[in-house]
Each structure stands twice: as C-alpha cells, then as structure tokens.
Image 1: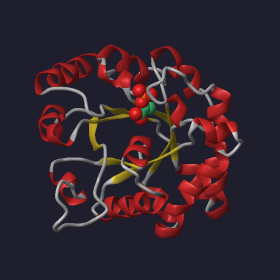
Image 2: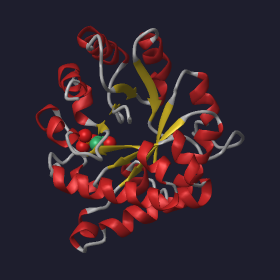
Image 3: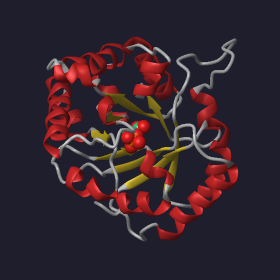
Length: 249
Ligand code: PEP
C-alpha cells in the first residue's frame, strides 16, 4: 500500500509574512484525517521559520535542492546535514529548473540523491522530458536515462527510501497539464523500469506527477493506478487550492 504524497514546491516565492499566512491557512483547513501525506518545500532561508510553524502538525518540511558535497569550501551551497539540522525530512533533487537553468546533469543529480540519503533525507527525484523530446518520441529514453543515473550510482534498493516525481517540462508552470493517460503511461514506464531491477521496491515506490497540477485536475490524475500524488508548484502558494489538492485523494 503506497501512501500518496502531496508536496508543495514554493520555488523562489514568498516573504516571511506571506509564508506565515500561507501556513496558517493550510493548517486551518487541513483535514483531520488526510489519506495523503503532505509536505512543503520553501526557499532555504525560510526553512526554519516554516518548520517552527509546522511543529506538531502533520505537514512535513522539504528543501528544493541540496549540495552533492558533504561540507567544505563550496560557497553558496547547502548540505544535506544542514537541511536535516533545520528539520527537513525531504529534498527535491534534479528539478527541471535546476537541470535546465543551472545545468545540473544526471550524474550530479545522482550524487545529490546519494548525499541526501547519506544524511537521512528522503530525496524526491524529479525526471521528465522537454517538449521537443516528447515530440521526437524520446520521452522514455530521457526518463530512463535520468532514472538509470541514480540506479547506477545508488542501486535499486536506494529507491526504497526515496520518491520519484515525473514532471514533463512542457507542463511545468505553463498551465498545460499532461493528460491522465499521458501521465499514467510514463508512471507505468518508470515503475516497470524499477521492477526490472526489483519488483518489490517498484511496487512500493511513490511516483508523483508534477506539471500544472491544480484543484481542478488533481482528482483525475490521482485516480490513475501509478500516480501516487503530486508535486505542486504554483497551486501550492494558495492555501485553499493546495488543500483542495490534498483532499483530492
Ligand atoms: C514544479 O515546479 O515542480 C511544478 C510542478 O510547477 P507547476 O505546478 O507550477 O507547474
């Protein structure tokens, strides 16, 4: 039984006051018994504030990125140990904005995944194709390559303590959502690829969908058999909208 997850990726948005209001709103309307687990990923500088506000709540804390290095002279980087120290339980790795805007390659992402796990963080490994890659029928090749980099460095057992997020790049922040059939097809492909190495791990791995997921389309996406939740960008910045997604399970 895979417990679904709804994760909010706040990206580079918010102020202390706005974050406080957002968390207040989410906590006020949070269902007494939520089927889905829930976490939010604020910018680094707000992790501690938000973590304090979430204390004793069912909502967990995640980071948006993590260094591949453990410690040392890496100006501007934040280590997995530091994230753990301020209360994070999860971290995104390989978000498409990191891959595309900051040129993170598959091997660097795999090292970040390993660094996160080494300190007890649960990595949420983001994979997904760009529009041109989908149009050229390369979706599966791209997703397989991104996934395989982690399997090669960390082994299939590592996915037992991780989450995968399928995020077609053409759907992120564009308002254009993958159809539930498109999402299911890639999610099933990911699960089968993991199953080729370990069927039990594959059956247990949560695979989230991300890409313009919102209150109005969450339920139909989440109804698909291999969609185990959502990684939510824009819609996680409004309490009511985010709560409606959490309640979509
Ligand atoms: C994301 O950034 O991971 C994301 C899915 O964004 P959006 O929901 O805004 O498309």
